[in-house]
Image 1 (tube, rainbow, N blue to C red):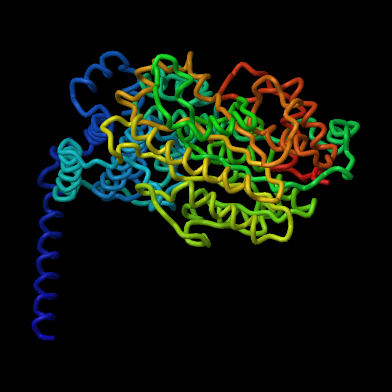
Image 2: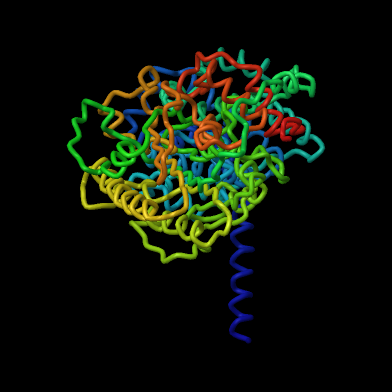
Length: 596
């Protein structure tokens, strides 16, 4: 006990000695402190950007080509730094806070872009609670360059801590200028009338971010910090507003349609299994690749024995929940201003989903996703979607097998079969798989595409077995399968880069093949001939199996005839449709007038 007390006294004495020395340094090294304080905004901006560029020559080239953008970054950093200095008084605290935040954001951007070719935006911060799942996705590679840059930032913070510059003003004199500084930065986020001329003055690219390819091109024009700030302010100003004509009379008018073929006499209530296959896409659509592979033989069997068509999905490479939202709600994310995570906009109350529709018809409803229930808040939010059971990675009731980091698709199909076999009622299942998720550096090949195709081959095997099993079943069952988006490959040297996919040519990666198969005779003659948006799928399926329709289903089927594709990502020139926008607002955000 005495020894511990002695050590503690020595430690306190040493800390006291260091603190006295730092206080002496405040006045002794005034010029050093002045320089380190004034130079910090320039330093942290250069380090945050250099961390992206990796090499000083690339950063110098950007500064020479876009000097006003770099000046914008420095001014914003200086204003934030001034506010922090005024609030904290001790300059080292302001340096530590801003330095760590800026550089951690820079590191996050570096890993995110290296993972899937998508740049960091403000809304990605909502996923910070799912650290476990995010780290499993990311290509986290600690390089000597990254370590070196991190040490430089830490050394700067340590230097300022030692020399201890201070703001020698009373708090009453610091609070007002601090508020003015922070207010000027905040206004760039929340006041478009202020932000627009400022961005214009500093030549910041404000092109509307209609899809990920435009975002990536904007990043090249703006650099990391200006890009992050401008897209954040764009996202805030793009906040969904209540439609001007939203009221009960307008909705009644939209839904005043005669329901066609609404007899229930011939409806056999087949099991309906919807599979949204993670990152599943047919790369044979790219003739340049000249793929000779049997990876898709299971999908080809689906097409041969059933039906194959084309869907427009609302995302590429990431944000799976955009496509999932459209399939679960039958509503377009375009009408919600294309949020990256639309389910986060919903209130925690019963939602008018497609599962609810099947439930009202006497179906047992289930959701299967072999991953963390916490990711995208599925476990918390999806319980309001009308599912009688939900199965996540820790609640599956069949034997589990993994392919690299993720549970195999065959496990998901086994779970679906078990739900069908154990249910006394017909079953509606929505399954979102995980097997084919990035990274694709894990596998027998050096090439990401080849590793990806080896995973797709496993999916084909599982589909083949599923078809064999369902073919033997006496229960009528319909299987629908579509990929949520094309996979995300590492940006540098990726297959998309080789194919020359950019903002002008990217429509092809939003076009996904879908498949319908049944173990009984199903008439596909009335299926749409042209491609259509994913949110129409639930209504097409209800029509295909002969389910009774309500006026909302009928209205959406009729809307598909006039507006088959409604997707900003696929085609930003598509004009807004008041009917789709109002009905979507009503069901997702509004009073749910159309629910019944």
